[in-house]
Amino acid sequence: MLEPSARRELVLLLGGDPLFDDPSHRRVYDADAYAFAGIQPDAIVLPSTARCVEQIVGWCHRQGIPYVARGAGTGLSGGCLTAEGGILIGTARLNRILEIDPFERVARVEPGVVNTQLNRRAARHGLSFAPDPSSQNACTVGGNFAENSGGPHTLKNGVTLPHVLGVSLVGERGRRIELGGRHLPGSGADLLALSVGSEGCAGIAVELLLRLIPLPTAVETFLIVYDELADAARSVSAMVAAGILPAAMELIDQVMLRAVEKAFSFGFPLDAGGVLIVEVDGEAESVAEDSRQLRAVCESFGAREIRQAATEAERAHLWKARKHSFGAIGRVSPNYATQDGVVPRASVPEIVRCIRETSARHDIGIGTVIHAGDGNIHPCVLFDNRKPEQVKAALAASAEILERCIELEGSPSGEHGIGLEKRRFMGRLFGFDDLAAMEEIRASFDPSGLCNPGKVLPGPGGCGELRALGRQVPQ
Image: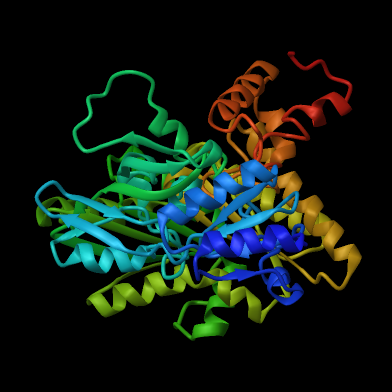
């Protein structure tokens, strides 16, 4: 809790913007969409201007109080939790679309703008913002920037990084840092790229300059049904090898398929081992050829049924099934933990096998969706947090799957971030020199260590966890 004098100072800085520090509000903000809660913040502030953010960050530095930025709270790795208490700075009220320039195909926005809000405005000009996380109806572009978010439709156009042209950050002691811009030459150190995906550890974004891309002229969307999930997984690499680059390629296993059908009654075949949702887009002629090749490849790998959306409503119906899949799990399990590993595309069949074996070994349900084209897996581990043995099994199963991702030359995170949850894997993924370099880079943005402490790097001070294991860490 804040001292009364500190609270009065913050209230004055906020100038009428909200401050919450009663226990009920603090409890609400001690979690994001990650399955487990963190330490409650001492106070939550909701500034409505960038200037107010600067003043709050400056005050935190004068007081020596840690601070964390939070957008919509849809993150899945505990990245916006106050791991050491302190001030939680919500950016949801910074929600203006400041400019859309259809000629230069850019948007200038505040971080609290919701993805779908931006895309509705951009669509008036035949444009879109490519990243489309499944939480796009709630998540904000500031969170996309912090986590380098992806989504089903980033297979062809990339995750957030290539779509960020510039950012205005509030950094050390409340100073504004301007990185990138519309017409800056590509010379010097690329600090903008370092800041994208820095998980709120490089400063708080208060304005973003985003690249927009043209909407495709033709789109075809398919639901491809398989008796065996492994056959669906093998089809993925075969499609890419055939020269097809879909806009999206999503694999859904039987557990998740049944949960979605129970929730929404979409008419999916409940006896299917798995399905692929594949979308191709572009010019009409190329889309027609890709669609023909796609059918041939999938049939050669045992697809028993291929449904093609005939209308925009049917297409939206299929994507609703995919993007609401995690919410549907609530009907079959009281709790779940969504993981976010990555493997090479050719290793998708192997990680599918690993997930199935892990589920059986721990006697715990796991429903899986995969951004199959880029090997980004989302196993959804089901448990009941009222039963300690299930919590233990869920944590063990999650760790084993992510360890296998690393063994397959992948990563424990593709788009959800390292946050609190996956710090312990960083020592497995990177060598000591790499971790030390990351610490130095982070310190260059945040010398005091007050900005989102306890995230990304392993252990206290970055390498403390490795020291505890008795391993030598570079000084």
